[in-house]
Length: 299
Image: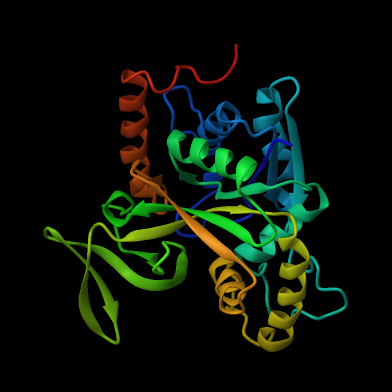
């Protein structure tokens, strides 16, 4: 069975200042999502699942349905504040609960091994090819995967970011992800802040950019863990149920091993509005190199 691609696209884009998920970056107004879909379909994925909000459903369908190739499934599922609460209350919270909560929305339509990406991040065609092959040949209920990027290939030139720095065990499986904040270049070094002090990070550190490979058996685990998270954290309107938190708990219990698939491609994202020209230039260069056709869309 071919794997599915789950695209997390319900974010608000507050730092960007708009609905960046459908903002064009290619020479013919192509979105980053379109390049991700292009790479995923070439790699062998045959269902694209958009995790969105009801208020942006029309905009997404207008943008992407005309691009759906014959024989490819496009599915739309919804992450809302009250999704999967099952009678629990959200307290004073006003937005959904984070990336693991978003993945749970895909349980309605995904019944095969699947990948998860962020809508506004460019991951590179090699990453899709690697993960598609892994999902078809190695994925089990107790064996997941994550694409790992080199830290230096993931930073914005226009502000600091948070990055999950991966620590591997003796066998090369993921042991933990250390969240580092205010990560950015200082001259030729990469620094982050910890307890008010600036510390250096190895530029070749492997980091998680939220590109995961899962078995569908993860869905009931997410649901159970999400209910516990709400019971414990509903009073904190800023608490978020992130994928790494879920995976760390599963690894600590010995329920799952996570392979780290190394990727040396440059990652691009539009965290800040100022990032957009850099991403546009990157796609122009990749088109000149023959990596992508232009226009990307079928005519």
